[in-house]
Length: 434
Length: 71
Image 1: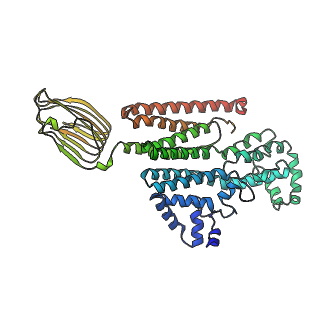
Image 2 (image 1 turned 120 degrees about the vertical axis):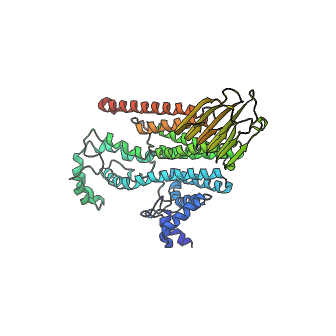
Image 3 (image 1 turned 180 degrees about the horizontal axis):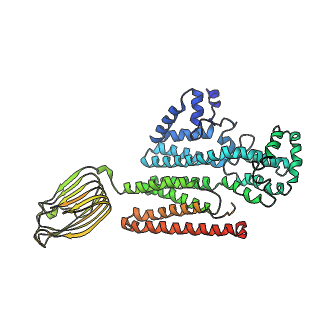
């Protein structure tokens, strides 16, 4: 059993996020699609899927590597790879958050897990982009520099995330010494087989007709290399992972605060995460590189809008309601909020004298609002409708952003009581009749 | 991390998301109703658009001037 587990590998070819399920599916001879659906369902209901997936990503090595992300981060294998550290931190944070979310089991934790998942996917997309393109490009470049004897510590640089601290110097600096002596290139090519590079001849052949592949450093000229080689390390910027970690941290602290001290509104989770992402992007405008955070921001913005809107309403009391008032004393004194449904206020039998004045304040999220007023009352309507139609004593409007602020006298002119109707309707139809 | 040329895309989206975040508490706590939002959103978009435009133009000028490009 433990051997079976040890033989488990994350698939490189059959992957959606990190190849965990592709590898598992191959091992168990199950279609990975089935496993994926199960994991997504487990992730939505309770977050177990996210926890298990993050743990597997952390612990199961990829096909072509002998150590897991955790091994690499802790340096348990031969070499310590600093590139694995941010990923390991993120995965560990995701695991902790989803584990605590599962324990807490509240709706908020679902939001947290979702956020963590979004962060993970964004991180993975970036790694995905970096791996196939950077690996083949970096390898020859590395060999090239090694061979020139300009970059001793070269081989450590991993082609993945955030190596700038260790990876950048070998990738970036050596470009300068190598470039000023283009004559040396022909000389060194001859030496390649001697140094044990089996690809030696291919190398020479590939280099001669197409000098670009080994990187912009070599052939473009003595003065150019430092400039084009500069963007390379930037693509492995730590800024993005740092921002995601900070966002997760902030959201996590907010959740702790929510549970133990003051409750916070749900949209605040998205607002805080979006704020951190925004700051990360702003830093990225001048330092490092973090454009992929835009994806996170684009996901978080509608989430913030929707939850803010939903937070205004208590959907537990959604439904169709109708009220009938016959005396002014029965009327609600303060603003009445309805989340959704058909709302009917029947005031047609409201007993009013000429001197009476009442107001009805309605705040409706979505639905159809019908108000019937006494036949002779004078009505002032102040209504604002996000989207929908209104019919107010024959005045009609349909579309977005309907605004009314008008006084409608009864058929008897002034007199018969005064009703002020303030309606704030998000989406739906408003009808005021006599 | 070394300072690099202004990345206008990051700048514009960073400002946009920051603006949305900054507006949120006003909406959440009913300080600025939907009517306020109708003013705030266009102001935000126009100012970010101008900022992005200026940054792009600045960059364009920098690219043309070799001394600036090196710096």
